[in-house]
Length: 319
Image (cartoon, rainbow, N blue to C red; front, side, top):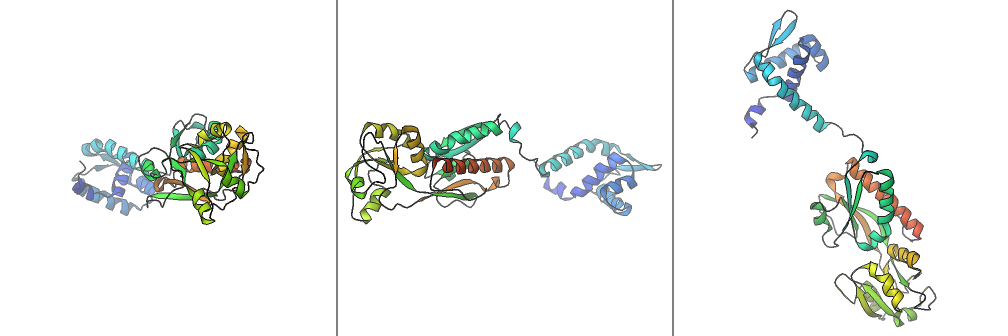
């Protein structure tokens, strides 16, 4: 255990003076290196001698001869000063080309569908030795997962963050409707009559039949007919291709599914509140070069993916 009482007697600058004197064995040269006058260095040496109860250096001609005690402690002091210097040194700029670690990102599956592929491709190009791991982000506990080290950052609709986290707004995501044109011969945009008449498939982690769409319809005195729910967005394309039904989901994944599976997209005939998607990361990672690079790359990838897919939302912030 560290002896606090002994350390309180020693000023770090005294140890630095000792180290330079050991290297130079000359007061004038040591003072010049330390940007001190000779009287100042002599005073520092006097304090060090008193603290360690040893002469430490004996004048021999124009130079200094270290005592056995000085020779004995010099390696440890040199090593300690080197460790301190390395600890407080400004870190080197992050070099993705030679990074061999793992980037971990938390996303729910609707955002994962939209962004994971292009993110993995970008990291493969710019950090070819790195790995990318996507972790399922639980909407109710992303902060706990972040603290547990499950991921470096989370992309989701986050609640108010803890004081040791940073929540960075990305974009407001609206919801749009999708359906298989082979199953439903309806023209887009859907009319309110078509929307309320046809069957609907909802996405709910808890299996709820009623959600935000139903609340919006209720405000205008309308209802819809939900005939099935699934816990994951990835189940929707096969379900929609198998039955005449409509799904109303976040725009980013809806446009991906439409492009991949030949589905029709339509703005729903009812006003729905947009969801504020944000980044969540640890405050201690704000200035870390690796974390800054990962956040910047994700934002650039997400911005381009939204633009390419034709989404109405955009990312205006820089991270």
